[in-house]
Image (cartoon, rainbow, N blue to C red; front, side, top):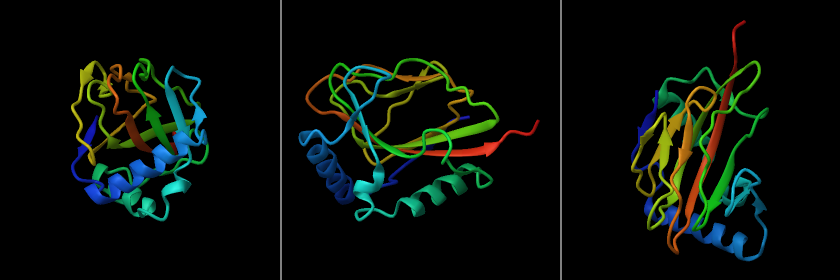
Amino acid sequence: MIYLFKNVIDSDTRIKIQNVIYNLYDKGAMRKNQAGPFRQTTSPIHINNLVDLEFIKDRVKNACGISDYTNDTVLYGDFISLITSGGFVHEHTDKYSGFSHARANILISKPINGGMPIINGKRYEIEEGDGWLFFPDTDLHSTDIVAGDKPRMTISFGFTKNKRI
C-alpha cells in the first residue's frame, strides 16, 4: 500500500531547506550514494533548526496507521537525498532480516523532468512539499531519471518494527 500526503512542508520552509542542501553540496559536505550515479546524501541534522522533524514523522506515522513502527535506528535511518541530472534510484526492494520497514519521503525540490517515484510499476507525480510512504522491503521501487538544472531533493524517514516469527 502507498500513502500520499499533501503540503507536508510549507513553501517558505522548503526554500530554506533547499538553500541548506545547496550550501552543503557546494561545500562538498554531502556523501556520494554508492547505489547510483549523481546521488548525494547527508544527515537531516543540518535542518533541525528549520523544521520539527519529529512532529512530521509522528504525523506521517499516525496518518498511515503505522504508529506501532519505531524510528529506524537499525537500517538506513533518516537522511536527506540530492539527485542531480542523470541520476536515478535503480529498481529494487530492500530485504531486511527480522524487520518490516516503512519509508516516508518528502519532496523538497522537484526536478524539471524526471525524479518521480515508481512503486510496483506505477509512477507517482509528486509536487514540492508533498510526500509518500511505502514499504521498501515488499514494494519494488525506483525513480525515473532526473533531467535538467533543478535537482531532486528529498527528506527521507525510516520506520521499522520487528517481524513476528
